[in-house]
Length: 169
Image 1 (cartoon, one colour):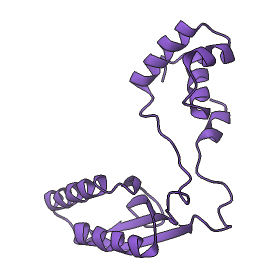
Image 2 (cartoon, helix red, strand yellow):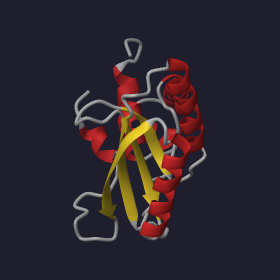
Image 3 (cartoon, rainbow, N blue to C red):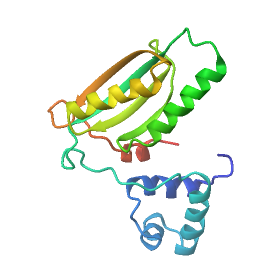
Image 4 (cartoon, rainbow, N blue to C red):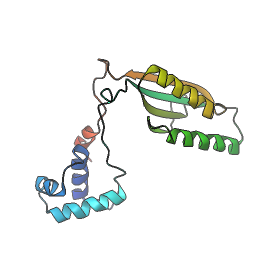
């Protein structure tokens, strides 16, 4: 955003590292006054900060699977109003799924949409996919999923956004 100042980026990056930090601690850390941090943070919360959230240890919460599901839209679906109705119904259903952390349209590798979700077991994941197909069956031509065993040794870097705070803006 053009109206963000260097101090705004500095505050934003520090909040990405630790969103629990107080305005007083943050001011001390970056060398400005606490009222400046409070005022700039408030502006950021209105313009660029969507939410404050916690990234838990999924395995300790009982989730064993992270699923990246990719959907190819049925090319025979030509009527725009039917596609929109199915899409809206599917979007509403996805919104109601607490295990879905992100979903939307995409491009590449012959797919049109994606969903990122966590599941406690393969049985739960299987039920999720079955229900997805029931909700959006006419719209879906193909479903592909990549499953990640969260408790496995293959997770080389756990989900975190702190690393983004180290990137030069």
